[in-house]
Length: 99
Image (tube, rainbow, N blue to C red; front, side, top):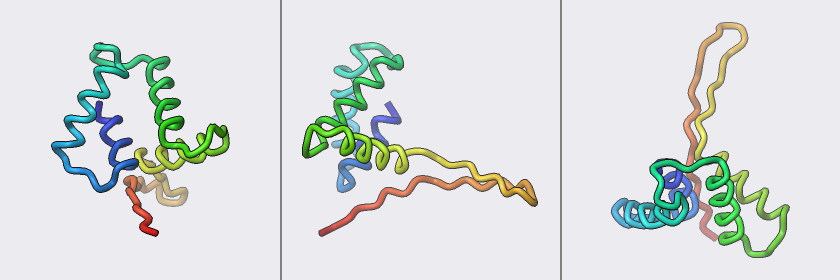
């Protein structure tokens, strides 16, 4: 369910915490089919539903671009510096473009 909250924060950046909690809880019932966790198949269906619902066209390139942006904004990157072996954690940033 935490992953769904992160996805919602990317797609709906001007959210209110209580609204997103309520929305995610309702979506979880539908997407996880009442189970406490999603299997890979259900998660893939969720991602397709997000791409289809948020895309402006039925277009594979647009789906890929949208899902790549979501992925980049919800994942934590672990950077290991070669010379020192120092580990740096790069947290995701949610960026909002206002036109």
